[in-house]
Image 1 (cartoon, rainbow, N blue to C red):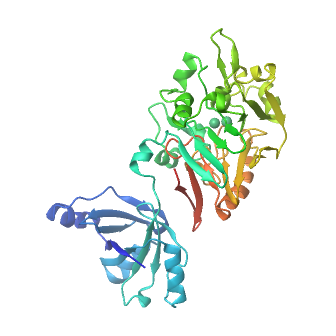
Image 2 (image 1 turned 45 degrees about the vertical axis):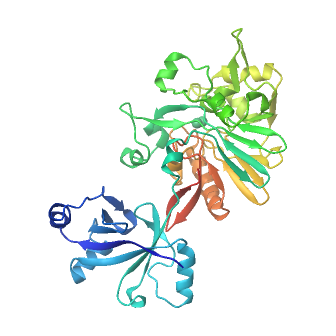
Image 3 (image 1 turned 135 degrees about the vertical axis):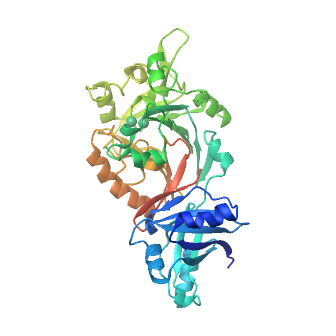
Length: 426
Ligand SMILES: [Zn+2]
Ligand SMILES: [Zn+2]
């Protein structure tokens, strides 16, 4: 096993006094502080070579740091060793009879999972073990709109982008207060947050695309309201993936809201609305089709008829029911909640599973069960579905696609000590 010194933690009673020494007298740079909720501390890291010093400030009277200072006064609190596989390390220590404070890892500072080993087993030093969670490289993160490919058993998955729009941050997070959600996705001066539109191509027996973004038919007024940004859109993405609209055999709808189905049709040169994918059958859930073509006051702004009615008149529409296998390995599964018949898409091959979560978990910030969109027509149904689904996703290690996440196309859900985290994949 290899381990590297990551940092030395120093319990601090008076932060200003500590800064007067480390920052002002020594002239060291202090990184932006970070709250570690699980430990009720604020961590101030100080780079000193590759390892760092970490000034630890208690944020609650019951914080382990507060208790430590009460007992022993300020001073060196722990050393942290970085390991590659925290689970395996803990397992090994347990086998050797080493006393552990944490038998399972929990979230730590700097995007990591951590576990403490009891000083009784380490000759008097509190040892923190740390495993950094994978973060997409800065480069791929800043260019996360470019197509990314993933081989899932015998199926190839290609995530695409049809530009970005902005929606009201409050509406995107329902009852979650702004001070919480704005840390995850910061709003603009009109309280809007930027969301991507990310259709997914599945290549197997045929070539299928799930959803198609908002397309190019939006009028100027709406485009301004939603700050629609299509400098990079589905045609660019298809081309970058080596595909054209003519290569698509099946277009599958999660539901028919404009930011998912707008790209199903396009304006022809003659000014009529025509199917956007010339060789494709379009697969839509029967109930969703009914609701979309019979809108009411609450959903009318989302169901724009020009996005889909032309499919029926062109004779390319297939209406299906819950649980239909649309192509070998690709099955729709009703989540409801967001709309009555909203579907997630289960993609399975050779024992591996990916799920296109659509508006059930629109961004990685919506991973906690109660982070549910205000747009949802039946939020309690979303909650019920999420509770079952997220547990299943964690247990079975599903690869989840986040259709609206501005930065992360896909990741895996993890639950550590009651906290829901998303491990980015790409
Ligand atoms: Zn929707
Ligand atoms: Zn949406």
